[in-house]
Length: 139
Image (cartoon, rainbow, N blue to C red; front, side, top):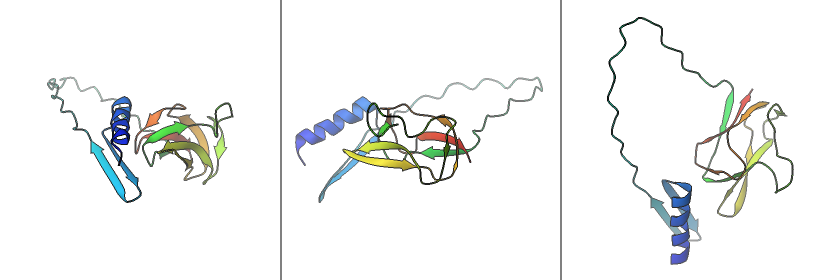
């Protein structure tokens, strides 16, 4: 693999704050990882003595589509065109919700269930991580 390509991968990791990246090109492959920073734990405050009920954790309702890969998210087929989906739109399982560009390949992101789009969690052109939530919809 060309050293210039490796340098570009390192620059991409730094710019996008990626922790790891793996590239396969023919019979060659490279895997780059960055050490995970260790943060000191904050001191734990004493529990309040009042018996006030703790607020319930807000759980997102509905289905969440997550990213199957690292790449750049695109909401529309090409610049200037309408996005694949909008908030409030009904989608069917298998319908394209967006595109992730990874290694110059456009990968469609398809709905796994039918439902109504309630929230688009990423912006057009945003670099996304593996497993990052992209869409939330009510099934």
